[in-house]
Length: 81
Image 1 (cartoon, rainbow, N blue to C red):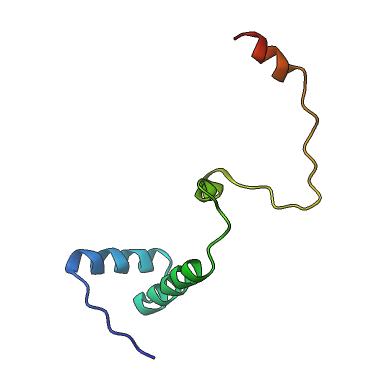
Image 2: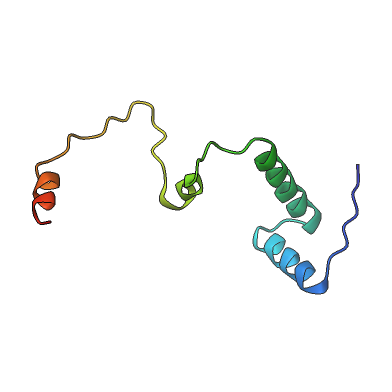
């Protein structure tokens, strides 16, 4: 299938620049981004209200990870209030 999309000049320049940065043809770059957007719409990651922050702050995805025990420093801070 070959969709046709009409873009304004400014958007077309941005698209071309983004494709150039990844050394890809505009059509290939656009195809990949559209596929990613469609996938996200169909299968969004479980997020709740703040799930998008995972992409900004990172998430440990190692199933063997065990959080270290909390130190006494955490309770000492509470004493300041």
